[in-house]
Image (cartoon, rainbow, N blue to C red; front, side, top):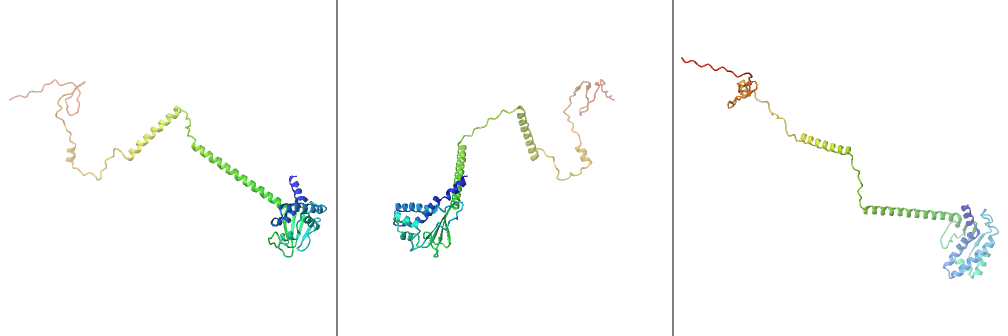
Length: 284
């Protein structure tokens, strides 16, 4: 419903006449007429044209009666009656106004929702600009609606950009506050007995494996390795190496529960001590 209301307002007689009158009187801004004179001309022109167009104005059929609403202008000729009456009311000379319009022949079409200009044979007129098209749209409700949509989209883009900048600013402030805030250590719970035993076992295992690694890397004892086979020895040399050393200083007899030993070489003879006296040698 809002779109329909906007369409009706854009195609209303007052809105369309305002654009047509603004187009015709815009060149007078550089003339010798004052602003009050131009405003009086605009008011008289709108009133005169509204009285003529209201009969054939039909927003639902924009092209109906379009020929009656056509205003033809040419140099050296008087303008249409509503325009000439507005000139006399405001005190504006038509010849000077025509020179401001470019001094070229053209037709102005005022239809519901559209104002267009058809250029003459010279093909030059649009506030001093050159144009080759036979028909130029000065204003239309569709163009205005498209411009409104573009303006709304641009406003939305600017709003979104503003929100993004605010979000980045808030993130930056949060980062700065986090950097300045002191670091508070987190409270730790006391460890259980099982956790402490596991840590101790882990430390013992690490120490044991460390010792094994050091021993493997640098052993404290190494098996002697012969670079060559030993030389062959004779039986006499082997027997000489196999001789038993007897310590003759050991002369005391060690008593045992079963008796005394009479062997000083390490052997043990069990039994009672002998009471036999050695036989005396007979003398001859």
